[in-house]
Structure formats: structure tokens, C-alpha cells
Length: 551
Image (cartoon, rainbow, N blue to C red; front, side):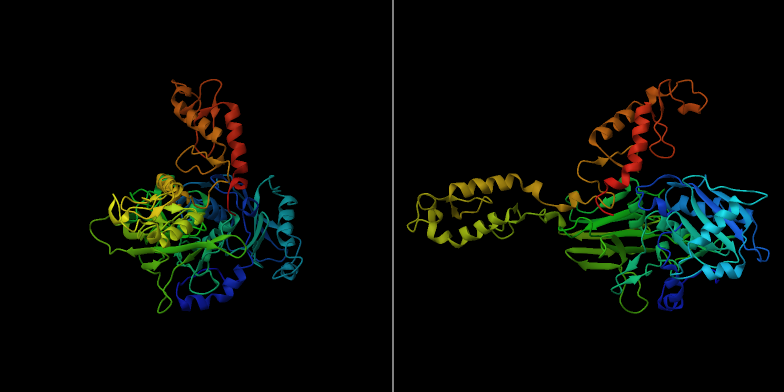
């Protein structure tokens, strides 16, 4: 089997890898499929990597230690290195086990007969390897309950995945592992807007593997690039204060400073959402900056990327890279659409090397919430009212002349006939209406701020269902809980110092006083709480995917 590598972002690279992409398309639920959509997700993942040979296999090209370094190594371009980096330390594979080589009783030809396409025996390839490990007379290994399984055979005969298990060739690289692990975490393929179904066409995102800008690792073939901003946001790995939803604060024009996704240490927005569709709060543009280093060192140059997040026919929300439609199909650097103008600004000495700037202009802050429309009683009147109220305003405008006193009066030519008063939708509005209509106008004016700017309610992919709110145990905690639990969480955070043993203890300075334990809502959460509160946090983490608004 050819070693997955690649990797070119343009037309030629795409065409060269069409066959490879078709092959990968069948691997939609790999490595971590039984935690798919377990988002937001932070924590340890149990993984058993089982190495198997066949009864007539030649000597494998690598020993088990090679794969241990590949999966678990630190600082060597490993699988764990990649996921620590792109998840901002949200994913930990410390519990992963690599075992083998275990010999199967099958010959290579018998295994190949089970491989490929719709073969009904394809799923047996993982089962055969698991059985070989369990029955190994020298070093038996039984997969622990709850562990995910990645079977690697030498020689390689197939590449596919299923629920909680995957099958790889012995020459799999970090890019292939990273892509399939992304599926296991519930991430979908990335697209571009260049065609109706331009799948695998975001070369800056590993979920378009193998049509990506990869980089070489010291030992393990190609790896990277990172994830695009929407995928990081979907997993809940951005700190809350590093995401900007444009217009949510009522601003309609601003120049924004972006920090590169792989440089969270510098100030700036890591992810910008720009909503534009009042009918769908999950339909918006995103803006991110990608710096050509680290896992992104294979990209051609530093670049700002603009994506559109929109609903697919199957109900999922997917990211679409906005690209030019001609030439080298470069990512667009300006946009004027749907009431939004985005302009990527030239790099300058005014900002750091790991930052970029964009100017954004939007009419969204003046748009009405669903169910309301602009009143338009006078030119420029953008007070949001019920549809019937706007219809009433138009009818009153049409009847205005007939309601004025033809002889004028104490208020000049705008004096109303008896039974009518000025509407006063704005101070100079002298259209004559009934008293009830003027009262309605006053009430609508007083409610104006509450009825406009849908951006205030664009919360991103981890929006909670009604009745739930974010727990906010820390800046990256997007787990949905009841409002009572969030209140309790804040109280526990505030009381944290008083619940630690002032003299330290067996767990260092975070040792809790008697009667308290670490909450462990996420890795490293050492806030001391009651046992009941820790149990509640674990329950809320398990239930988190069921409390989200969108799949």
C-alpha cells in the first residue's frame, strides 16, 4: 500500500490524489468512533494499538517501540504531540497502550481476501488481530473495557474504521492517524465553496487529508496541518475570551487583531464569528489566522482564512473555505456579501509576527430578531416591531393627509383632526394616528434594544439546549448544565483557596482539606469540592453531547 503523504493544495495536487481521497472517504468513523460527537471534549482517551503479522509475513519494517514513539512520544512529532498542540492540551493519550507484534493464524492471502470495499468480512480484520493478541502464548494482551482499538498489520492490507475500532497498514503516518482521530472525535470532512460538493478541499485543515499542506516529521512520515477554527471551536478547545462574535456588542465596524491558531500565547482573537443570517444563528462566516510554523509549517505562507459555516442536507453544520474561483484558487482575502464586508489588511510593523489584522463591517447589529421587522414609519426608522405593526405604520402613512386639519390649527399645518394625535415614532414624526397607535409606538421604542441584533444570540457550535447554560468551571469549559449547577460551580471556584490544606499534603499544594476532593471537571481541575459535586461534574460531562442544540 502506498504511504499516505501529500500533499499539495492546488488543482494538480487535488487531481493526483483523487483516488486516495476516494479510498479515505470510506473511513468516516475511525479510531475514536465510540466517542464521536462526545463534545465538548477534554480528557484522557484509552486507546489500544495492536500490532499484528500474518503467518507468512516477512519481518515488519518497525518494532513496537517505533509505534510507541509514534503514538505516545513527546517532542518528536508524535500522534500525541499533534493532538496536544491542536487541542490546546485538551486531549491526552497517556493511557494508550501499544502491544505486539502478535502473529495471526491467517496467511497474508487470507487476510487480503477479507479486505476492501463492501466486503462483508472486512470487519473481521480488526477482530482477528484482537484475537491474536489475546491468544498470544508469549505475551497475551486483552483490550481493557472502554478502550478504543487501532489494529496495525504488517504487511498492510487495508485502511478502514468502524465503531470504536480502526485498521491501518504498517506505513500509516501522523497525517492519516490525525485525520481519522478527528473523525473519532466527531469532526467531519472540510469543504470549500468552489463547487457544489468540494469535499477535501480545505488544504489548511487535516480533515481534508490527503489533499492538505502537510509537513515532515522526524520519524513518522507526514503530519499536519492543524484544524481549522470551526473544528477547534466545535470541540470546545478555544478559551471563551479568545472568541469574538462580531456585532454581539452592537459594533458595526472594527479593525480586529488576530492571533495565529498555533500561537495562543500572543494577544488577539483566535477565532472570529461573523453572523449574517437572522433565520439561522449557526450560519455565519469565520475568520482565522494561520502562521507557517509548527504543525502548519507545510502551508505555503502565513494567511488569513475566511470560512462559511452552513447546514448540510443531512443536518450537520460543515465548514467551507471561501476560495477564488480561478487561477490557483487562493483563499479569498476580501468579502462583500449578505451585508458583511471583510477585508484582510496588509501586514505591518504595527503588529507582531504571529498576528494579523482584518477590518470587518456588518449591518447585523441593526437587524431584527426572528419575528420582528423594521417599522419604517419614517425613512431610516429601524425600530423592530411585529409585522402587523409595520403594516399599521404603512396604512397610517397612506392616510396621513386625510387626518390633518385642512385649516391648520394650534400646531400649524400638521394639526390633527379630532380623535387623532401625532404618532411620534421619532420626535419629528407628525403623522396623525389613533392614541392607541401612538402608545404602541412608545412601547416599541422602549423595547427597541431587546428586539434587534441577532448576533447577541449567536453562541457557536456548543450552544446549549433550552434549560441549560455553560458550566464555566474555567475559560474553556463549554459543558452544558443547569443554572443551579453553574451557580454552584462559581461558588466552588470562589471557595477554592479555603478548601485547600494550608500545609499541603500528599498531593502537593492542591491537597484538599478533609471532606473535600478534586472536582476534575476537566484535566487538571483541582478545585476542592464535595464528593457529590465531583460526581455531578462527571455526570454532566457524560451528558454534555445530549444537551447541545446542533449535531
